[in-house]
Image 1 (cartoon, helix red, strand yellow):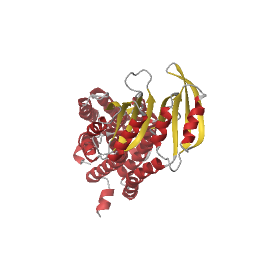
Image 2 (spheres, chains in turn blue, red):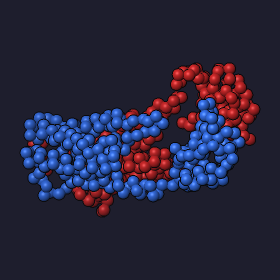
Image 3 (tube, each protein chain N blue to C red):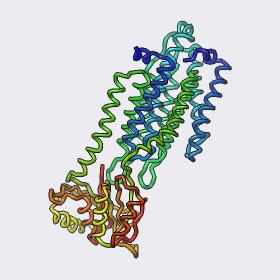
Image 4 (tube, rainbow over the protein chains, first blue to last red):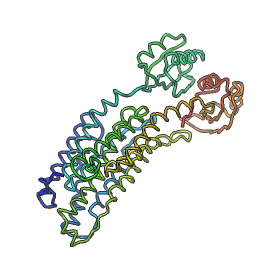
Length: 227
Length: 242
């Protein structure tokens, strides 16, 4: 810890104002980055969470240090973590296609809250370093992740008429070293063009556009597209 | 010597621990990011960071109570619990995990591996934050091994298994005979049929879950699916993968 900041760590007016400003600052930085990507929890949400957590931590300190009542200074802070987990669970939405949305937002809010706890306790260094690492994660790590990701999965949807067509599609996938992760077949009653639709999840190194191009030539295919 | 320095509470060790947490989260996230796309990677890293930070805050509290606030401690009494903050991260992530788990259709539970992965990430983060390198580094190696080596092996193993679970939607309960015939024609064995006479989307559709074991000669999942789908009474077929 930097001892030069020790003067700001007390729970007096100067310390409180300093904490609130730094919490706002950190919350803003994280929030701006998120709202730049048009995430549901933007700017204001992150500031509110960071400030709220900082205030909770400050209050915990105040009760023990200033009012000198016997308590664990970390108790209120600890429950903030619990509570943000609860809020995060409510943030997560399950879409119609049964995919999870909002998980990264929930995790980000949780971590922002913990940064707020650090700042509220007077631990400015951790707050700033933590904010820097969160921003680092959101920007560079995401890029790194996409770079080293191998064998992505994607979904293709095939409309066709005969059973044999699907066998051809499967054979083409295998020939191009794409493995089939999941397969769904539905017969279409109201469609004048095709009798069946098949939703296939494939995994492999071939890009979807290339695979579609190769599959498009198969006889009996009405349409083939990615989802 | 370096390890001793890193076990103390100073700015350098804090940064090292946060980076260690970052690496732990990223390692687990990478193993999971195949299924979740890019969300998985960042989520795990953020959670791991948060857990490590919560423990580091505890260390800070301890330091302050022993130095700057020592006289207040002498007067009021020691009430500090060093594991309180860390303990609540586990509860908090439990809640978050509950939000991830979805009850899919047909008795499928999805999101369980994600939720438990988050839980493990928190544990790693707590260890990293407190400087418990003896536990975290071996654990990280084992987890990377399990996720990246064993996981694809498991997936491949399952794919080659002859047991499959299919959900089939069709017109009437009587059609089950036809479907069963198609299945046995392919030399597969039916373990169980679970019929639901339901009203989905306003139409009175029947659906059933078939648990089959495919024959050795004919173990292609997709072949079975397309044969069943060929029947005129069948509306849809899909394989349930748990």
